Length: 354
Image (tube, rainbow, N blue to C red):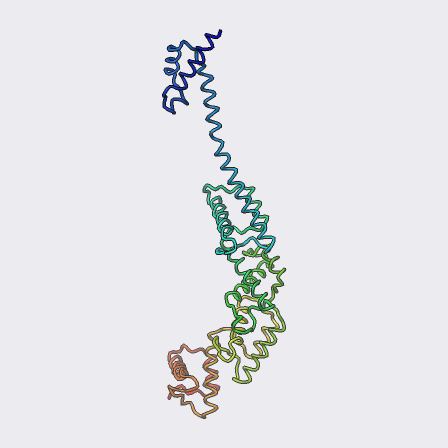
C-alpha cells in the first residue's frame, strides 16, 4: 500500500515539474496524458483535470466583474454629487465650464452624449434606470433645453442684480440686455400660443420655473410702462413727433423702449388699451415709415424756422436732409412715392422742382 502511494506521489511530482509550455499546461492533450501514463504506469484522471482547469479559468474572470462594479460605483458617486448640486441650486444644469466642479460638468455632458446615442440607435452604456434617476432631477438632454436653461439663469441673475425682470422696459444702459429682452418676448409669445391650443417648445416645467420667479406673461409692469410713456410725451413736446430713432443719444432707454413696443405689437403681446394710447399720440409701428416721418418733420421744422425750402448739402441740423429731399423728388417723378406721403408733403407746400 505504501509502495503504491509512493508511486502516485512520484508520478504526480514528475508530471507537474516537467518543462511544459504554459498554454499546454492548462490544456493538456491526450498524447501528453498517455505518455505520462506509459512512463509511470498511472491512470491520470484527464476528465477531472479538464474540469478543474475550466473552473480555474472561470475564477480568473473575477476582475472583469470587479471592474464593472467599480464603474457602477463611480456613476453613483457622480450622481450623488449632482443630487447635492441640484439641492443647493434648484437645477441640474451646469455650464460647460464650471470651475468649482469641472469633473461633474464633463460627466453631465457624457450622459447627454450616451442618451443621444440611444436616440440615434447607437450603442450606449446608459441604462433606463439611470435615465429615470437623472430625469428625477429634471436633467436636460437636448441642446435647445440647455440653451433655455442658460437664458433662464441669466434672467435669475438679472433679477438678483436689478430687483425686477422688466428686461424690455426703460433702464440704465449698463443694465440693458437685448438678447435677454428678446428671449423674454419669445417666452410670452410661446405661452400665448399654448393658451390658443398650439404646440411650442415651452414645457410645463419651464412655465412653472418662470412663474415661481415672478415672470409676468403679459409683460404689464404698469409703473415702468407709464414712466416710459411720459418720456415719449416729453419727446413729442420737444420735437413735435414721437418717431424716436433706434440710436437716440439724449435718451437711449426711450429708443429701446419704443423698439420694445414695436416688438410686442408684432408678437401681439401688447394690450389694445396701450396700442390705442400710442397711436393717439402718433406712434408708428412700422420702422421704415417712422424713419420717413422723422425726416419729414425735420424738413417741416426747417421751413418754419427759415421760411424757405433751401436745404443746403452741409445743413448743420442733418447732413443727410438734402439727400432725403432730392430722393422724394426723384421718387415722385418715378411714381414710386406713396399717395399718403405725397399728400403729407403737399400739406407743407413741398416744392417738387427747384
